[in-house]
Length: 199
Ligand code: ATP
Image (tube, rainbow, N blue to C red):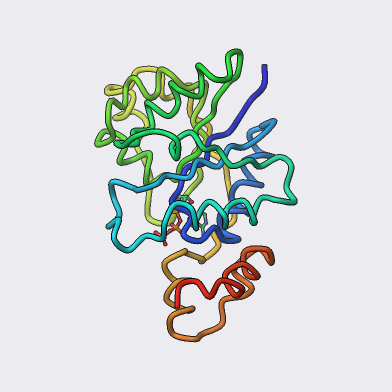
């Protein structure tokens, strides 16, 4: 069975924190590939402050162009909102029969899983959840197991380096004329400069 990791985000822009995390997941969870699922809009973020999906798509393609094990997935770009993760996984399972899908998320997201749309079904659809530690989050799998039976055995917690990089900080640095180059894959840096983005 092919094992594919699903890594969702707004990627505005994609940065080295994302790359390092995905590489660690790829290795620790023995994945064959990772699909980067670009979310047109996150229910948790103010969409007016987010760059266009076309612009972010170009940036993700630049970030991934020399990394064959990472691939941009258009699944959420090509459908209508709302972008519930449970539906994203259902569509991918139809498109890629015979594939094990492992959803990557931070411990903070796992803790908030009960607030997601249809969390029980979401967990049922998946082969596994790959959970990385984030500062200040200690999800309680016993509590989650009551809501989503099976989640405990499906969850693998893996260690990833804590890199203090966020897209919001990079955008602010660019606006303020502070250094930002070395937070990014070189291809993303070049594209941001060439197109004068985030000014
Ligand atoms: P923003 O700063 O705009 O909120 P972000 O940098 O957190 O964005 P997202 O696109 O929202 O980027 O992140 C996608 C996924 O990557 C999320 O699951 C998030 O937890 C994770 N992530 C973001 N930054 C890091 C980092 N430095 N190290 C590890 N994981 C990260």
